[in-house]
Amino acid sequence: MRAKTNQSDMNICAAESLKKSDAEMNKVYKEIEARLKDDADTTKLLVATQKAWIAFRDAECNFQSSTVQGGTAYPFVNSSCHDGLTQSRTEALKVYLKCNDGDLDCPVPGTN
Image 1 (tube, rainbow, N blue to C red):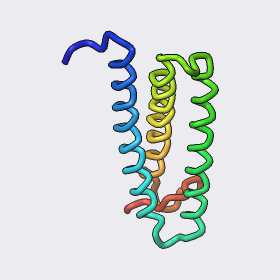
Image 2: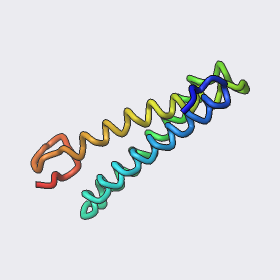
Image 3: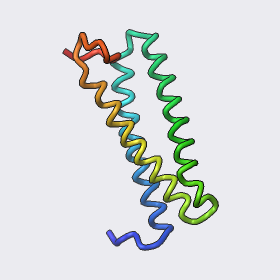
Image 4: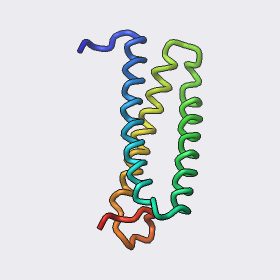
């Protein structure tokens, strides 16, 4: 693969990276949902939390990329921000998948 040397290529690369990160986050989120299938109240909290996080991510990245709004670098900066925050969220969600039954500070039941 050739190096990404122009803005268009960089924008495409950032968008592709975000797409992969978003797919991974959704996979982990679905695993958590599956573990919560018997707990409607906690599932509602998960959904509300994820919606709030998405709103935060979008607002944060709009703020972060505001200096290049309307320019050719905007898609790259905005997608890169979304990608980084999405990867961080995925790692945070993965922690819930490591919970053990009886963990008082973990809302997701363990698999043991």
